[in-house]
Every structure is written in structure tokens, then in C-alpha cells.
Length: 291
Ligand code: 5GP
Image (cartoon, rainbow, N blue to C red; front, side):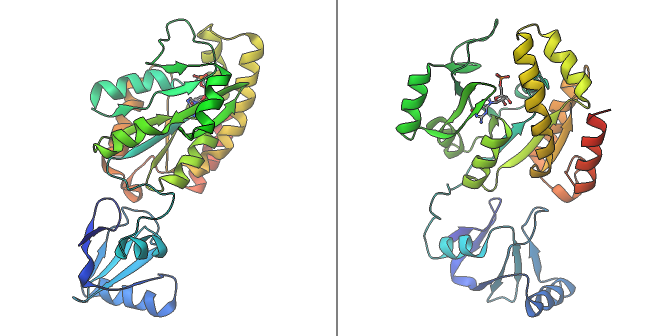
């Protein structure tokens, strides 16, 4: 039986001798010896090694999945609460007004990624279409969906509820598509718990001045809503550390930002990617944001 050991890499179950934790001294030595002898196979895709698979052919495989996850898969059990990931799941967050929709419009022109249409209790803005931008529903309808377990995640943002519908996302991933969720930071963190392999991208204007200019420029919000969104943005920016990648969207840079997202998703090789979030980069971004 073939078992997915991360990012679609498969191993033959019958050849696995043990799945061990990478953090003990003997295993570290074993990994080093295997690397030196060319017997190490790294399938972490640049993520942290969370388990090491020892095989009967003396190959040592480094995986980004937890030992328990792998042990469960090898024993034929899918882990509880976590879904088998066939297509890629991409989460894009960033302050409201960061130009996410224009960037995504460009992204969908250049890819066949699928957009997950969220449900919201917010009123439709001018130019928005029900079922395309959002499913615009009432608070009662929203609560009913939550109690029926139809939401993958949901959150109250600036006085309105927003939520990702579970069924369409599962369908897209089941059919092997790349599904894109454009959601705020709390919802994103919740989805990541369910889909640990999700690629998390933070999209933001370079500065808060730029964000304010955009929020005012689109003339869709009241003064109070603009203030709410700028306040919310401050908290969101601080959570850039939780993301794998940071993409900046300056004036007239939508196409470039979309291209960066495509490159990131298509490769997801964090170690080699210039947009990968490191603590230093995140710190610098936050400092620059308030300039
Ligand atoms: P807006 O009102 O500007 O369309 O969206 C406000 C915020 O809600 C944005 O940060 C957007 O990413 C987020 N959002 C949109 N859909 C969802 C969703 O389904 N779940 C969560 N948690 N946030 C969402």
C-alpha cells in the first residue's frame, strides 16, 4: 500500500521499518550519515522536519508530517479532523483594502486555481454579485449554517460575519484543484489546523498610509467603517509571522503580486523563495508598515 508522506510523495508501507522523532541525538547522527552516504531523501519541501522514516533499504526519509500523522496513515487511518489533501489549499490574508480582490482577479487570469466563495452577513458593495464575490446571507441563515456544521471556519470581522463553506472546498480539493481561500487571519489560523499543508500567504500594501489611501479611494465605506478596518489591519499585520510567505502589493503592482503568488504556489520551496517569511523579514515589514 502506498502512503502519502507529505506533498504527494508516496512510500510503500511494507518497506517502512520505523517512524521516529528527528530531535534525538542518535537520529540526528543517523540522518547525517544517510546524507553523507546519499541515502537521505528530503520530502519536507523546505518545511521543518517533523519525523524521520527508516526503510528496509537503509533510506532515511525526512518528512514535514508529525510522527503520529504518519503512524496513523501507515496503519491505514486518516487522522481525526484532518482531511486528506489532494489538491493544494492556498490561504491568502491581508488587511481589507490591501487590493486582494484585484490581485486575485489577475491570479485567476493566469491560472486554473479555483476561488472559494465565502458567505457573509455584510451587505453587498456596489459592483459585487451574490454567488460570485460572496454569498450574501442574513445573520439567521449564517447561524443556521454554523449549527449545521456547514462552515469550515468563520469569524466576525468589523461587525459582520464571514465564513468558508466546507463542501465546495472539499469538492475542489477532492477533484485535485488548487483552492484559494481569501480570508482574515483568525479564520486562516483555524483552517491551517485542519489542513496543515495549506500554503499561507500574507498580502499587504507596503505601508498603512497606502492602505488608508486605498480604503478612502474605493469610496465604498463610511468613515467609521474605514477606521474599523484600519484598526483591524494593525492587529492583522502583527500576525504576518504565522504566514509562510509575504507578498507586497504596491500601487499598480497587482499583476506582479499575482505572478509572485503563482510562483510561490507552484513551487512552495520555502528555503529558496525570496518571499518566504523569516522573523527578520516580518520585523522589517512591520517597521516599514508604520513609516
Ligand atoms: P471585505 O468586507 O473587505 O470583503 O472582507 C473583510 C475581511 O473578511 C477580509 O480580510 C477578508 O479576507 C475576510 N474574509 C472574507 N471571507 C472570509 C471568510 O470566509 N472567512 C474569514 N475568516 N474571513 C473572510
